[in-house]
Structures are given as C-alpha cells and as structure tokens.
Length: 224
Figure (cartoon, rainbow, N blue to C red):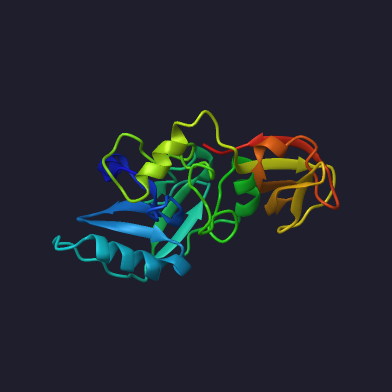
C-alpha cells in the first residue's frame, strides 16, 4: 500500500515475497513522530527482520513494543483509529489497558468477508485472491514494491480463477472440511459461523459445491 495515505489515518498493508505471495499483513498507524505497526504476534519477528533488511542505510529505527491493541464497535475511545478495511469493523486503540468489547469477531469476519492470518491467510495466499483490493489493502498507483509484478498481472486478468468466498450451507460444516463439486476438489472451509463460512474456492467449481456433511445454498465470491 502507499504510506503517503498515513496523513489521512491508518493504512492496511501487506508484505509479499518476490513471487507475490503473502508474508504478513499489518496496520500502519500514525503515532506522533513515529509509525506504529500493528501486526499479529506470530508474524512480528519475521516482519521486523524483513523491514530491517529493506531499510538499508536509511536513518530509521525499528523496535518492538509492548503496546496493547484493543478493538471494539461501540463509541470510540480517545486516540482510537477507524479500521481501514471496512467501516463496520469498528475501531482499534493502543495503550496499556484493554478497552475491547464482546464482539464475536469471527462471526463478523464471515459476515464482512475479512480474511485473517492463521485461518484464510497463509504463505500460499495471493492477496488479491483474499480480497485485499476490496479491503483497501493494496494501491495500484504507487511505485515499485516486492511482489508488484505478480500482483499487477493478477489485477489485469479478466477474472480470478480462485480465492476467498463466503458460502452458506444447508447444514453444519467445520474448519478444514474439503469442498468438492461433481467429484472434484473445489477448495476448503476456513472460518465457520453457524452455517456460513469463509472458504477458499475454485470459482469454476462453485456450482453444486458441498462438503461431506452439507451442500452450499449460496456462494458469494470475495476475491479482488
């Protein structure tokens, strides 16, 4: 994404491999004279190493912090930022106190089509298949970045052949269930909320897709 957007608020972004695959996603948050990087804890060490490598001789210090992140959907606390991915994701705030609420975040992610590291997002992911353009997570007008060539090529294809989808089933499904269509593998189930789930799906096999326990009622592609 383009860090010049920081003067408008927080920026959602990702770090990619040269092959255009996902390494980490994170939020860049203006914090006085600094930029706070909000990243999932399991990804923080790897992100710091990569950023330290890319900064070369620039006069930039990259340091780990123990700042706590809270998120919620009610009235915004002082200093909170609006989640840049979707207006219904509420706010995020940073400090020493947990100010979060009891939102069922997995259910909300399924409703809004929001992928998350450790569930939908993995080292095999391409960010456009996971909907990063829809989530304000990529800028196609900025300068060069690692993985840009593959990402731009995917952008200008007529359509993505596979990616994130929200599927409503006629019965219970579970994370990890294999999707099939006409006897062929069609994808996999990830985050589940009641009978709806975020899934990775081959779109050309969306018709008649099912698991061993349930059939799809509706399929909503979320890639792009």
